[in-house]
Length: 404
Ligand code: AMP
Image 1 (spheres, rainbow, N blue to C red):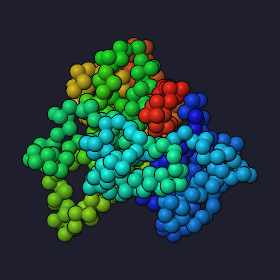
Image 2 (cartoon, helix red, strand yellow):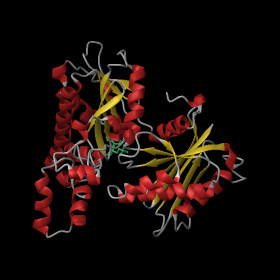
Image 3 (tube, protein in one colour):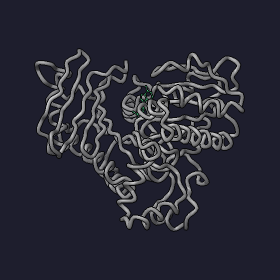
Image 4 (tube, rainbow, N blue to C red):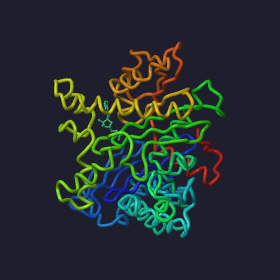
C-alpha cells in the first residue's frame, strides 16, 4: 500500500514513496530552489538508482510533474502507473484551532489552511500550493493533510492561553498551538510500546531536539503542554531562534535599531539562539567542536541550551505530577551525548540514572536508563515522513497499516 508523502516548503518540495505495510521507502527525493536560480532535482530509489541534476522548476507544479515523471520513468520505474499510489499525505505546518487530527482534504479545509496564513505565512502557503498541484496532477487520488499542530490540540486552556487581553484569543485566535506534532506523536507511541507503565496513566516528556527544538508533556497519550507557542519561536533557544525571552526585549531591539517588525522577526528567528550566542554556527556539531577547542561563547551557548531544557522539563514534571519516561529524538537528541548527559544529570534528583557507555551510541533506538533508574530514558529516532504516511493510512482506514 503505497503512500506518497509530500513536504512542500517555500522554495522546495521533498517527497518519499512509502509502503506503509512493511514501512519500506521505495523512493525519495527533493526539488530545491524552485522559482529561484539554479534549481536542483535529487532522487533516489530503493535499488540505488540516483539522480542529482539541475532541472528547470519555476513553480511547485513543475516540481510535482518532474517527481511523477521520474517515479514513472520506464527505464527506472518505481511505479508502473499512478493508480499504485493509494493516497498522498501532505505535511501542513499550522492547523490553527481548526484541525485536531489529520483530514481528507476538502475545499473547506483548504480555506481553513488559508486562514492560518497569518501565523505561518511562508510554510502554510507552500503547503497549500503542494496540495493544489497534487490534486491537479493526480486527479482521483485522495489528498490528506497532516498538521504539525494537531497532536497538541488536547492541551487544556490553562496551558494554551497567554496572559494578554482575552479579545486577542476570541477575535484573532492568539494562543499556544505547539509544533513538531508528528514527531512527538510518533516517538510517544513508540515509547508507550517500550515502557512497562500503564498507558492510561503514563507520564512522559518527549524532547525533539533538532535545528528547531520543542518539548511535549504527555499524560495517558494526551498532550497537556508543549514548549512552542503561537509560532515555532517560543520555548527553548534553538539553532537560530531565540526561544522564550522577556517580551519587552522585542520592543527594545526594534527601538534600538529603528527596525520594522519584519526586521525584528528576522533577528529573533534567524540571527539568535545558538548562532547568536556562540557567533560560530547554528549547527551543534560545529558549536561542540568550537567549545572543545576552548571557545567560551560556544561553551556558553551549549550550557544555556541544556539549562533551559532542564528548566522546561522540571516545569513539565510538576505539571505531570511526576515522570515515568523521557524520550530524546531529532538530530541533537539522537546523536549528542554531551547534551543528553547534561540534561539527564539535571534531572538526577528524580532518581534518574543513565548508562554512560550506552549514551555514546548515536542515531539508534536505545534504552539509556539503567535497571535501578526511577525514570526511563529512551532515545527513539524520529521519522516524520513515516508518521505522515501512517496517519494518512489511518484517515483512509487502511487497517493493514496500523500505526505502530
Ligand atoms: P534536525 O533538525 O533534526 O535535522 O537536527 C539538526 C541538528 O542536529 C543540528 O544542530 C546538528 O548539528 C545536530 N546533529 C546532527 N548529527 C549530530 C551529531 N552526530 N552530533 C551532534 N549533533 C548532531
